[in-house]
Image (cartoon, rainbow, N blue to C red; front, top):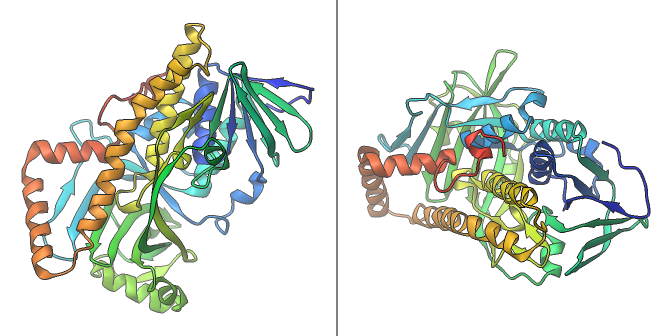
Length: 412
């Protein structure tokens, strides 16, 4: 829906940030009849090309249910590739952990190119009946008080809502302006991402190979004109990343083939390589007066378990349910009691996932044969102990804890 210019534009919420999480929240609210104004300074047309962001994302099975329920999946330019098995190992040693679907045979997740996720989310938002999308617009001033939120845009327009939602990413200026403290540190790692073509089919299996220098993730992508593809997220020592990026495509493909153990046959590159520094941050709180944080504005973790985006989707599902249920009761959506419910719902889950990924990163960074032997023993033990393994699989699928309705595939 296009916004009609007016001296004051009103909605149930104002969302700052039109990335993957911000657009998903807009779609979730629209699906339940709440109105939202989304403000983002970017030109969305520039975000749909692989040169803008060649990364891929693993969407957990519960996140996929939400995307189905709120109508995003109807707009995917490509359906994505299912992850039907996850195999984790310490280096290339035999054994390790294998996760398989349960009796429902639902895939553990789906792999999507980020540009396809963006295209689907934008198309869903543009089809929304209760959404106003303000691209290439920037909030010059924001006032939050007991009466509501007023956002003054750089072009003079003014917006009003009971609640402001920051979905601006890791360096959220709204979070900083609110004085919300953040625990953060950088890892001595950089992630190299790309897409490979390989000789043998991946059979919908995702691999996580743990090396002391950092994990090597191989993620199944849909075939391209009959050619088999997988995405990689290769965490290396920060000082080693520039050298790997400087290699020719042929030499880099040879290095990845060695890191994989050659089990997928001959390797060639299907996309340019890019590198991203890795860090951790966790906001001390995710609410303030008439303000809620979602996604990377609230937390960012190491990609070792592929849960970063899914944590943001879990924020979306919880916040949307809190707001929709509050609206049905006639409550002020920016009221402290409403926001406290969101804070309580998300705080434990995000802290546990953040702590788990950070711990894994540190454990698998310990070098030496003794440490490696202990890790292999532990992985083998977990693989044989049903309850522990089931718990880990539930975490991977995003089905643990007090699950919001959308993540169960149910409308709010």
